[in-house]
Image (cartoon, rainbow, N blue to C red; front, side, top):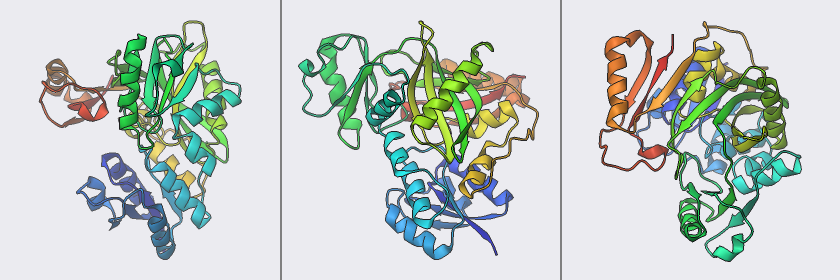
Length: 370
């Protein structure tokens, strides 16, 4: 009898999950709004049911006879993955995780309750007025409670900028809310984790580059990170505590953090899924030699993840195309060192457009460093 795996979402990273599942002998049943996304044609069976229609997806999965439910890089898909898994009595995370790993205000509260450092923070809505944030020290960072990919994020250095930043974040929020928090200085990193029955394993640490002020759009990533070896055990231990504080027990996890000037570690946010922007699907397997996609599938069907090194580990990076100079670097690598180029994706070359979030970048390329 065929092993049937439900996959939530159909974007480009999902196709890598689908193909991996097929190589492992699974029949793939993919659910997403029908819009011509690549996962539609890659699936063994595609169902034009929107990711948000979790009750309809659960009923269809009952009919099919699913053995596991998973996705990879989408925060939006995570609650549906867990809802369907719980409804079928399969492996997944709790309702608490659905809330605290997606709502940035609730995440801050959960981390604070676990005794982990968090900057000062508060919730804001459409009725926010400047006096509501009296006593908070600038600079501040303002972001929607429930969005990702840098949507709606602004750094605020002066009080007169705060109300506009909150309006912008609230407009971008599905729930109409924003979180205001103290800005954390220091280099930015992320951690890729796999969680199985509550045991958190950190697979890779990633150095992150951003545009900086005011929107902090990610411009590239590299693995391994440049965190000194002497600090890595402390960082790994902190990340494990932070992931556990959100009750992420059975899935991938992606933790973004800063190393602060005073030596503390500050969590930016954590998702109950692998990192997007090719961090999970490409960089982690290349730099560690481990099969991260297989781990996600194994955990979803109740199997322990395998940490075998299946390919030689190689340092690697990705870079997003924001300027003509970025595109020129990509083209030079394709000409002069094509063997190092893993993948190139160009959306457009309209460099007159301002890049304010991940969706307004022009493309990316991934390269091996040796």
